[in-house]
Length: 270
Image 1 (cartoon, rainbow, N blue to C red):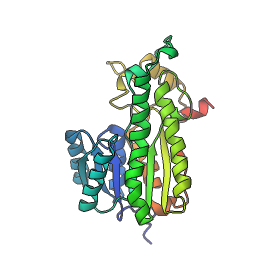
Image 2 (cartoon, helix red, strand yellow):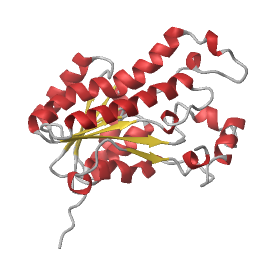
Image 3 (cartoon, rainbow, N blue to C red):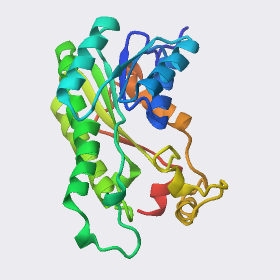
Image 4 (cartoon, rainbow, N blue to C red):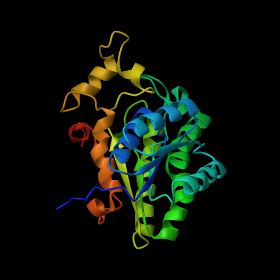
């Protein structure tokens, strides 16, 4: 008997931030289980490369330039995806990041943290990283009474990590919004969950974790020392969580949840 528990062949998945390391890995995973993929982001070059990779593996994919902070841009992308691939049933909101001026190095004064830097990080991770995508693509899902929204939060949203105070607070807000939407849409066919990755080396944080010679920085060593598995994660290790939450048959009774993928880091801090 064929086991189609994770079959996504009837789904169209949008991965906002699919041009990045983690978002791209999740796009690959969804495509591997049959979903047609729309990669959204600002870099056409990186988006085209991701589409080419998915197609080379036998999948179906397209790229559409979009700004997650602009609802008109997202709506334009949604309509283009609908015309080419069909109505979206899976949304992965993986846009986000931090800014140096919103980071507090050791010994710095929290009272001097610039408000504009705080606002920029909060908006990028909450408004662009969850709110606007859910409004734009959620509208279509509600019309179909079918959909899975997966917000990419962070383990930092569960505990107030040092230095990245604005980022941590924003990701905590993403988790709160995820639970709100899960409750609101639970009887309307739309499930809303989150994945909270721990420390995964990517373009934005590589210099924070590694020296040029490949050894750990002081910060990287501290993180490894607090991670029971004693290593960082790799993008493919988010595949199982995202496919499970996306698949209606596999997770039909799962909504409002936060799946932590962190090598055990959170277990040493709570």
